[in-house]
Structures are given as C-alpha cells and as structure tokens.
Amino acid sequence: MSNIPNWNLRDFYSSINDEKIYTDISKIDNKISVFVKLYNPDIISQISPESLYKAIVSYEKICEMIAKISSYAYLVYASDLSNEKNIAFFQDISEKMNKKNSQLIYFNLEINKFSDDKIKKYLKKSPDLRKYSAFIRDVRLFKKYQLNNDLEKFLVEKNISSKNAWIRFFDETVNNLEFEFRNKKLNSQQIFNYMSDADEKNRKDAACAISKTLKSNIKTFAYITNILAKDKSIEDNLRGFDNPISSRNLSNFVEDEIVETLVKSVQGNYKNISHRYYKIKAKILNKKYLNYWDRNAPLNKYKESISWNEAKNLVLESYNDFDPALKNIAQLFFDNNWIDAKVKSGKDSGAFSHPCVPSVHPYILMNYQGKVRDVMTLAHELGHGIHQFLSRKQGYLMSETPLTLSETASVFGEQLTFQKILKLEKNSDKKRIIIANKIEDMINTSVRQIAFLEFEKRIHDQRKVGEISVEKICQNWMGVQKESLGNAFKISDDYKFFWSYIPHFIHSPFYVYSYAFGDCLVNSLYGIYREKKVKDFEKKYISMLELGGVKHHKEMLKPFNLDASDKDFWQSGLNIISEYIDMIE
Image (tube, rainbow, N blue to C red; front, side, top):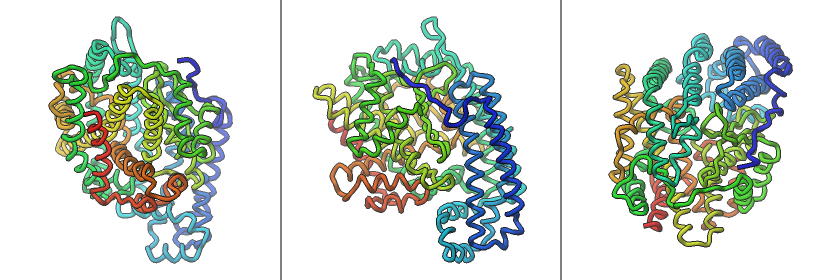
C-alpha cells in the first residue's frame, strides 16, 4: 500500500491563505459590476445578436472564475472534513460565491423573455452566437419553471443557510462517525472495507458496529432527510413540477417517460438477475441463505492485496488497448498528482471526479485499499476524469455532461478494465470469480440503484403528507431492499438503519438512476464495440465524450444506432448481466 498519492491542488492556489484567492474575488466583483451595467435588463431586451454573444462570453468568464474558487474550496474541504480551518474556509467561500451567483441570475431569466421566433432569428443571423446555441437551448428548457428574479435570487442566497447547510451538516456528521470494532475506533472507510472481507466474522462484526453507530445517530439523519425532502417539495410546488423526480429529469435533459421505462425494465428483471444470482452465491458460499453482510462477500477465500502501482498499470493498459489517446490523458492524472487515493481520517469516504473548470482540470478522490473493487473504482473515476478533460474544449457553460450520459465513460472504463483482468487470468476457477465479481458490480450499479430510487420516491411522496417517522423511513428501506435482493437473503432488523449514510439521497435527490442508465447504455455500447457493428467506433466514442453537454442523449447515441426511448434498448443492456449469470450458473 505504498506510493498511494495525495493530490496537489497548487494548480488552483498555493494554500487556503494564498492572497491570490482574495485578489481573484476582487476581480470577480469588478467584472460583475461592469457586466450588470453593460447588460442590465433594459439593455438585454433591446440587445443585438452580436452583443448577446459578447454578453454570454463575459458571463461565462465570470462563472468560471466563481467556479474555480468554489472548486478549490470544496476539494480542500473534502480532503479533511474534520479540519476546522478547512471547514471555515469552505463555508466562507461558499457564502461569498453564492452571493455573486445570485447577482447574475437575472441574465438567464432575461434570455428566457425572448420569444422563440426572436431566438431563432438571432441564431440564424449571428454565427458567433450559434456557438452558444446549446447553452441557450438548455437555459430555455427551464423557462416554464422559472420564477421572477427576486424569488430566484432569494432562493440561491437562502440555500446557504438552508439546503446547503443541511448537506454540509450531513457530510461532516457521516465522515466524523466512529465505529467500535475489536476494541478499536475505526472511521467510515475502514469499517466499510470490512463489509467485503473474506472472513465472515469480520463482516458480521463490522455490520453490527455500523448498525450500532448509525442507530445512535438515526434521529439526526431522519431529521435531515425530512427537512431536505420538505425543502424540495416547497421549491417544486413554487416552480410547478408535477412529480418530485421531474426536476431531476429536466436537469438531465431526459424525458420522464424514458426514465420510467428504464425503472420498469430493471424492476422487471429483479427475479432473473439479482434474485437468481444471489441464490447461486449462497450455494457457492455453502450457505442456505445470505445475510445482508454477505452481499459483498468475496467468493475467493484469500485476502486481496493489489498494490497501487499494479492497479495503476492495469487501468492504464486497459485504456491503452482501447485507444492510446485515452491512456495518455489518464497518465496525466498520475504524473501530476490529480488523484487523492490514500485512506485518511476525516477524508470524504466516497469517490468522485470533480470536473472543476476548463482552465484547470479534473481532480479525483477515492480511498484505495487494495481490493479488486478499488481497482474498478479507479477505472471508473478515471473514466469520469477523461470525459471531463475531453469536454473542456466546449467551455465552462457547455462542458458539463447531463447525468444520463455522465456515467457512460466511467462505466465503459470499468468494462475495459474488467475485460483486461479476464483476459490476463488463465485459471478457469479464478475466471469464474472474476465474472461473479463483475456481475455483483453490475447488480450494484443497476438493480441496487433503482431500488435506491424507489426508496427516494416513497420518501418524497410521503413527505408531502407530513413528517416521516424514523420507523417509517426504515420500513421503506427494508421494503425496497427485500424486493430487489429476493428470498436468498435473510435480512435482519439491524439492517434497517443503512439508508442513513448514503450521500446521494442528500446531495442530489434522484441522481441514482443515472448509474443504471449508464450501466445499461454501456452494456449495449460495449456489445457494439466488441462485435464491430459500427465503423470507427473508437473515434466516434471519443468525439461523443468531447461534446460534453452540447448534444442530448438522442443525438449522442445516434452514431451508434442506439435509442433510449426503445424498451428493447434497456432490455438488451440487462441481458448482458443475465448472460454472465448464465455462465456462472
């Protein structure tokens, strides 16, 4: 476990005390002041196409400057959520940048006051403005749900002491939890690592320790969940969204019907995929049934210990086999310390690739502990990082990929690495274990995430009626888990608290279906690549990643002859998982 890197954030600033931070904040203030004078609502209402283009260019530059400082503050904060100086710095920057964003809200609202005919004429008349046609298109999608300027500004400024404050409180609470295990106090990363330990007693004792700690904090987590669900309900009602999930779908630029088709497709495959697989797993482990702490139990009886260098080389070779251009980008993350992978107390317990801003580059956070799953996490987050690095060419306003496609490169990277591991392994028994591990990862990515989504739906629907008790939240959790896992599991009562540590429910309601979306999409996409059904697949794939948010899913998938509105598209992706289970069976 030597040579595991910590990231170097000096491409932003030298430290949180760097005077350049406050020089940049002053520059932002000056640029906002000039922008508001040059492009106030009265001027925008009469603005020419070329002047609108110049206004968007100025707006983009200011937004990127704000995002740069915000990204730095967040990364410093995520690296140690127990450091009071980092916490204070993050909160101070968040408040300052939040205020500056609120001063610019009017600009998008003014663009949406233009008629459709006027926008079409402007885009036709100005080649420069057409460069931002995707930005204008996406801004106008929210026209129906936008409020007046004062209300929009109020909501942004109020978030710092309401929604964002509760998210911060959740993060700091979870990441500072301590778990009693064998007379030791472990942090989140350490205790959850035992949940995939080869020794069942270790898994069971870890599960009991987790349950005990979560139970002692459950009222706090339930209160946070209730507050944020109510906060979302109030805003949804103000904006006129019919369903709690609709605002997420709109921000993902995907139709409600397509998401519903995905959900029903996965739920319709519970029995054939997760229920069937876990029965097989119980037999392999010589058990009549599985306990919840057996879900991630390794099928091999030896402890995994894959060094950081082995993991790095394996993932780099996997990307290189697909296209050397992707490997070269991935190499930058290692050569320049854009990855923080060492397990540390206080550090965010999850994994992410933060896109930051085009003028800097993405940064990856994970907690590497030498397991195959950690190797796959590295491949996954590097997929995100490569995607974010390639899409920078679209500029700040159009580089961000909708969540429906944001998991494509990450899951595709996992698939490449899986195939590489499978190819290198010559022992047939070990190959079966590798395939089984991949099945579990795919179940976690598709079935488990859709079960999470169903849990969220129930919580947000019930919160409309009134505050939800701890017991009711736990009942919802146990219900969706039993439905998705099947009768191969004996789920004991102490599992009912495990909903409380999952950050996606707090940070980004209904985000989780993007994983299932990405997994099914990539299964179909990889099948096309493997069978050479599309000419110049690699070039088209890289071009798709470079587009960022310029095109939506229908246009993005067209070169590969894929259509997400077709239910057979989802079933074909799920069939890949089923075929792997057939092999194990």
